[in-house]
Image (tube, rainbow, N blue to C red; front, side, top):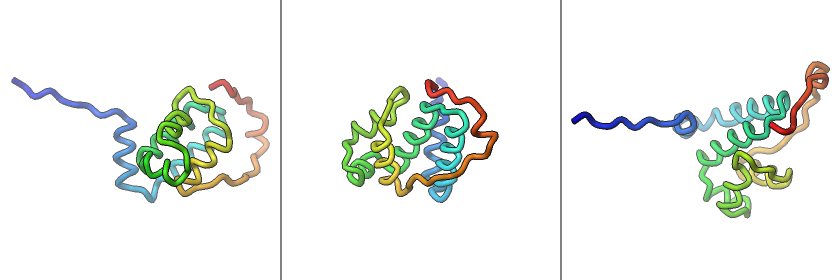
Length: 116
């Protein structure tokens, strides 16, 4: 009898890649935030943060941030509406921070849908 194949999801492949190449996480997160600045799609941003949180280790982030494992998972869930302070705390625990960047006029005139 043929052995049943197990397939991995794209997120699992991404996690494996970023575990092997942690030096590329910063670029990945920068791109995720740039895309969020353009389209306002919160669920996509949270998905990216959730994947990197798993790469870095939810337990380690919980210890570093003072937020419980469950709290981090809940804050980064697809339909979550985490507060700025929560996201900032998680980002800081990952070893990153927010910075201000001036938008060009094309970015300012594009419409954003905050309900993504």
